[in-house]
Length: 413
Image (cartoon, rainbow, N blue to C red):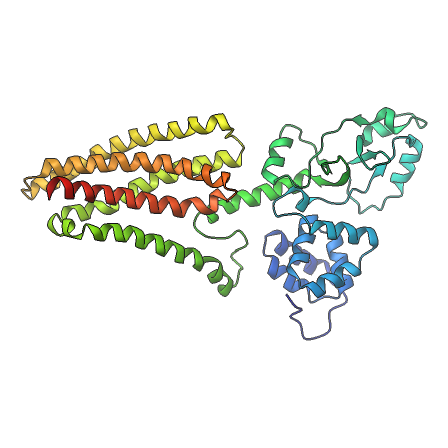
């Protein structure tokens, strides 16, 4: 992305405009926010980002072009530049993407008096909750609670008052997994360490919560081909680019279902009543599968599906599909019998039986598929929320309509 302004970059930014840009970035309208931000001088952009969350800094740096990113990084101090470069190395929706630099770090032998004096010199704009104690290898060995620090004797050592073997997160941990780990802790800030136990940063509980909320809010859109980057403010051309490929894929699968129906065109021509029940079967089976899919994806997101629970879920969805299919199939069969009898169709009872069996089997298959497909896709390292819906719709349409028309052809013609 290049600077859209033809005039020289502006040298100042007022509070109102700064808040407006920050709001755009927090609402995930990243490109709109960056477009506004690029109207300003590089030093102003650095000053703005220095007050932003790590995730916002990361997204801005990834959105601007390479030349502008280098200008921004070169305008920062050495330590800040290193931290911002580190932000770029982490994947989306991981703890690392929301991590900030740890500003309050001490050695175990530091005295309470020395520690308090260091803290007093930390700039007021720096937000921190705890102090972190690391050894000579930068490994996290303890956490200092400020209250305990103030209540300790001035000549006490940090190693004597620190919380030892502290809980920490790793930068590559997904936001959902991190939220599960910290749910029972309810503390405002967490240290982040690499696999060697070295302190690499901290992450605020609020940042994790915001990341989780956004990820959850995006799931409904993923199921119908709406990417999480799209907002109400997204330009028409980009919205079209985001959505249309999904519709093309959906069109191909719809043709697959249509091809199944075309195989039984002669059957529909002779038994027109069957055409009435095609959308009924497809809709009922599709809804049964969607219910199963939503429950399964929710369980995957919350980490409720350990290996032993997957089989139990599949069996449960099979039972639900069987019962729901039997009840709705009985109602649909009754309606078919009444309609066929009113037209003096000699095969009214057999048509009702066909509808009952088709509805029963379709709901059974769709309920099982709605649970099995997300589990399979997750095992293949694919996003279940983004991939399940289209496969499920195709499967339920083909099974429901193909089964009904196939039974009618076999039994009646």
